[in-house]
Image 1 (tube, rainbow, N blue to C red):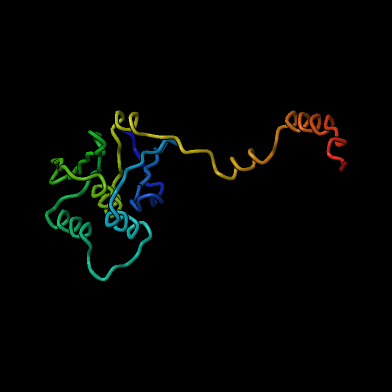
Image 2: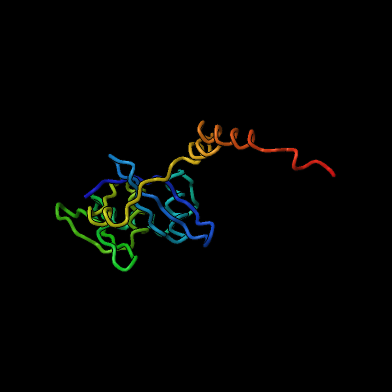
Amino acid sequence: MIEVIIDSIRISLVSQHRIVMLKEMDSERQLPIWIGPCEADAITIELQDVKVARPVTHDLLKNVILEMGGKVSHVLIKALNDGVFYASLFVDINGELREVDCRSSDAIALAVRVKSPIFINDDVMDEAGILPEQDIQEQESSETRPAADSLDAFSDFVDSLDLGDFDDE
């Protein structure tokens, strides 16, 4: 199992869907998971410590687990089948660890509320994990700085031009 943190929640410019980016604790590798807007809002509300007038669904789930004497030990993104991530909540009830099947987005939304760790199965991270792209500013600066030898080639080309060909007749 690989422990991850929530790196960011992004919005697809193409579809307006949300993507939660889970970042490996000891690496730059990330796992992107497409989630719904409601789940994205639920995660964001908690991460940004926004106060809501009444409990949202994930607050309700947290409250039910606590009232029943349970404690969320951790969540695990355990499988990826046909593009769908499968997750489990692990709830400790009187020393007995119970596994509850759930959607990944719900598991993450609950984990941020109860401050429990989020884990990814190694096979899932190996299959779907990505390394972040080069920073856009670094990329732009390397693209706008031409190599010295390409400038020399351009200078040689300009020097070889015969501007006499453009004289008016």
